[in-house]
Image 1 (cartoon, rainbow, N blue to C red):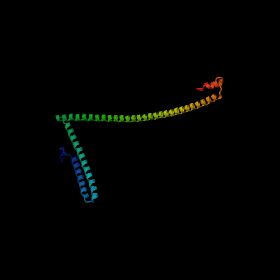
Image 2: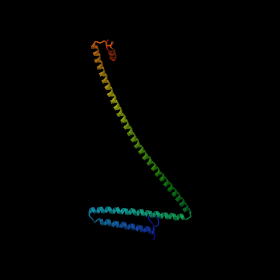
Image 3: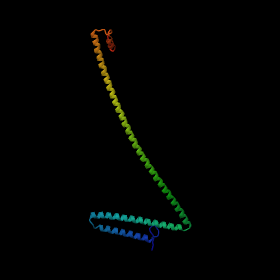
Image 4: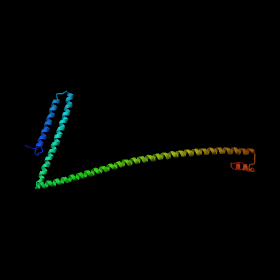
Length: 209
């Protein structure tokens, strides 16, 4: 004989058998828990936790299977009702069509969402890649700037050395001019009458007549 489930749907033999199996499993778990109470405290606590977990898994499995059976029963009832050609069947068909259309729209939205998420992921990857390229280019610019600064420092040092050499040369030249001037003056020679001395004297400054 068939009864009814807690949801009000007719209880089939398969449902009754599944319920009986679940009840037997729960009973066995309870027996194991009761037997575990006679063990030592540490082992009893571990076994109790294990049995409680198994009982919870059995309850969850029973709930899921019962839910699946109830849904199957509901769908069977819906299909049987839709086979009938009355007003309720037409309304049910219309509702089913709307539900199917809604499911299709939902799947379409989910697909578009996944595609959009993929596009966002691609954009993020491109952004990271561009960021890496910008960082690399900035590093190259900084290195080039550093090279130019180093070149500028080298050029500045070369210029300073050249100026120092020029100043030293000017000092030596001045000393030589003064020495040569002193020699000419000390020789009491009229340098204007001697072409060679005149050429030399023309390169000197402040030579008295």
